[in-house]
Amino acid sequence: MVDEVSDMSSPLVSVVMPLYNSERYLREAMDSVLAQTFSDFELIVLNDGSTDGSQKILEDFRKLDPRIKLISRENRGLAETLNEGIDLARGKWIARMDQDDIALPNRFERQLQWLQETNADICGSWIRLFGAADTYILKHAQTDSAIKMELLFGAPFAHPSVMMRTALVKELRYDKAWEKAEDYDLWERAARGGWKMTNVPEVLLHYRQHDTQTSTVASSRQQYLTQAIRHRYWAFIFEQIKLNKEWIDEVLKLRMVSPSQPNMDEVDQAFAELLEHNSGEARAIVFEHATRLYFRAAAGCPDVVARWGKLNRDYGPDSGIATKARLWLLSVLHIRTDGQLFERLKRFYLSLRGIA
Image (cartoon, rainbow, N blue to C red; front, side, top):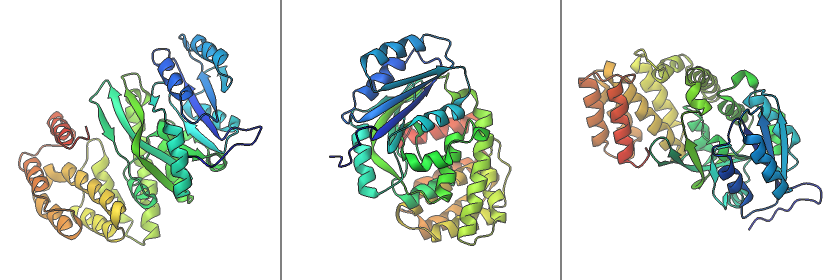
């Protein structure tokens, strides 16, 4: 049970949901919020200049539920719209929601319980992806230390799943300069600012995949910005634990769309040091992502099996026989990461693990 209660003038949770031309999936998303088992919330819906039938749907919903606050105006973009919602939020917590996703009925209740238990400042959850691609569960790291390692490689939260402390996010806000990767930018700045982070290790949101999503349409811009944020955070972590920052560029070469071959001695050193400085879930997260990057290096690295094998002997969870076989295959056949065969093999492998 959630112990916290709101005062007479403010709800405990402010749900911020920006939208643009969302009539196809909007009713389902709205219904999932309004049907929450925890009911002490306001739903701030920001119609960012939609030209379809979204406004009519929203007006119908507003007549039915007084918790809905509707703002409709010209298109200004996602980051500015999110900040407008943050400025309007009256609750202690801000819960994000997207126009096309489905929140499970106990999402808010479970996240508030988890925030109380962990005393965290931001809380996401596992998500189930569905829609245009294969259905699978995406499991982000649970603990603060592991999440802050996962940040080295990408966003450690599913953006529409998060609930965050309003007072803190009002200070940081979303940065329009990083739009298309505004969430990753916010999490990275929050980590450097000392926010305590967690994810509920349960599926609390169904995340819809479809061709009109921003992340699909603007993928090139998103990849560029994401790589810049990664570099920023790697530099911060390496400064904290006094590692050689010259290694960073070599590691991040492997995150480029068409990677150039890095200095693998420096890649080996970077991951060995990161693994040595971590334990538990945080070490497991670093090792998992390191393994993915060794897959990406394999086509141009004849001794990749030996290199990864040493890392695995020192820090890995098992013998690694299956991984060595895959690395050997990629190396011998020179299967590059920017080719279709690599993507097919990757999806097949992930499907066997129940990830994709």
